[in-house]
Image (cartoon, rainbow, N blue to C red):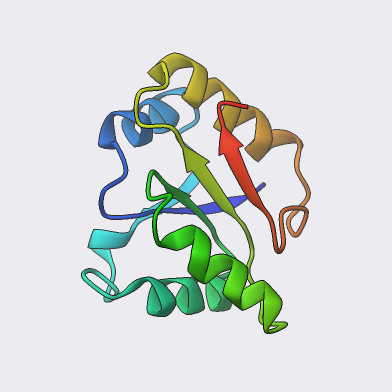
Amino acid sequence: MLRFVADENFNYDIVRGLWRRNPDLDIVRAQDTEFSGSDDPQLLEWLAQENRILLTHDVRTITRYAYERVRLGLKMPGVFEVKRRAPLGQVIEDILLLAEVSHANEWEGQIIYLPS
């Protein structure tokens, strides 16, 4: 099953909904780690070390830094960009489906936009 980090600005209602539907889902909130308040490149480096996919609404900066890691040949386990105004139920369903049917490294080097 996939492992996630929800960035500091990620909608906590989505995280709670994911945990309600699957209490075993491995999601860490960035603000609950030593990387709380860190810049995007530091967060992406930590995600690479931990092999966790980032859940974010930040299309402005994270995308640029994630693609930069890929361009430099650095590990980038994946980013799921979630539209802020997307229906919560649909987002929760999409993330759960991806978590349950994906292989551990399937999203390496990719940025996925949800809902699609």
